[in-house]
Length: 461
Ligand SMILES: Cc1cc2nc3c(=O)[nH]c(=O)nc-3n(C[C@H](O)[C@H](O)[C@H](O)COP(=O)(O)OP(=O)(O)OC[C@H]3O[C@@H](n4cnc5c(N)ncnc54)[C@H](O)[C@@H]3O)c2cc1C
Image (cartoon, rainbow, N blue to C red):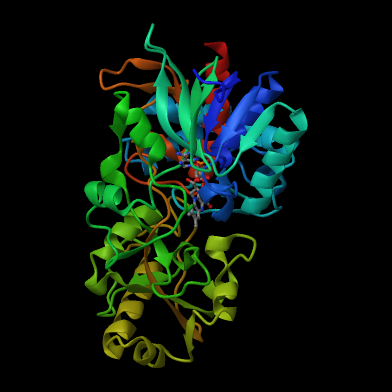
């Protein structure tokens, strides 16, 4: 090893929600950490996210009259993942979520007063934060411990193995053109996010999502480095076939990169022919898949004034009013006029809405079986009180939500299911929690919860 080598207890790669959670957890337990971030700024996808976190049984839910429990959260996570997710990871999320919610608050993360219901949730479970502030709060708490050394503009390149026993003991890293080694006596936590910015890797696993059918949004540094570094060591991966776009992104607008899910407030989704094509209450990842199979991969969310009014300006993905102020929502007094604006056949759109309203009255959607606003929550509403609105919508890939196989202690597993000694992972680089689809708030939740578990395991090892 050269004089330039750095030594610490724990090496953490990536300074988003998962990396800061791991670093802070380790520092609070009295251990030194070196946290590497390849970008000049910290935050990754976490800081630019919608700021929704999924927790159950919180004080905020109680204050909003919402009854929730670990068991219901467990059932919802398994169900929305179509039971393709790893039960032990879902259990780890559930068992550590409430404690992590309190821990985040103690670390200075502030949750807004509103609780909303979104993808995959049977009860209102979306806890809102300002995502950039949340990362800043964790960073400040980490700094205050005096034990976390943050190196920005520093890219981890390769994992380093101890030649004597094969244990992973650090990384090689690059900063300002020079390469050096960072060694951790307790090993490494990979918290390097997903690979939404790596078009070649996305194409390899999800060729159906490409520049013609979808939009790609996420942290600029999220190119799959951690995934590749661990694969080089023999790590296994899972859920790669479940990369999906999230429904509700305006296809051309570049000012607001968040999706809008008016469907979860009662809107219907129609294609360019003016026809419904899906049960709008399902996970917005599955809605994304359904959308890109429609002509031009573009559709419209259609709603009326009461649905517009039920939007929530505290939750980015339900904030209809803001999209309206941004000029992204089309408005007309009649459905016929709206159809002309979005260039779908007026008679078909009118018939689609009438048929849907009949289904709402009858309590049975004979075409797609929609029974709720979202997942198992909310009574369907008719679309009948003008003015009427259309929100052009495609699918945006905001994250990859698949990746390294880990056990419930966040030890990275090799292709034979054996832990790679010294190597841990957390956050979006990890596969197995979400399975086939996705619950809103479970990615940021996973980053915080699994980041803490990874640090604890590394320090105990
Ligand atoms: C627009 C948008 C909205 C979203 N909304 C939500 C939401 O409301 N709720 C939710 O749960 N999820 C949401 N997500 C997904 C969620 O934000 C991410 O899954 C989560 O933040 C991932 O956290 P992370 O810490 O694992 O990764 P990130 O926050 O992406 O952090 C990873 C960091 O690692 C760094 N890095 C990568 N490679 C290296 C390397 N070789 N060396 C050093 N550093 C490296 C990156 O630069 C990055 O800063 C959203 C995502 C986007 C893009």
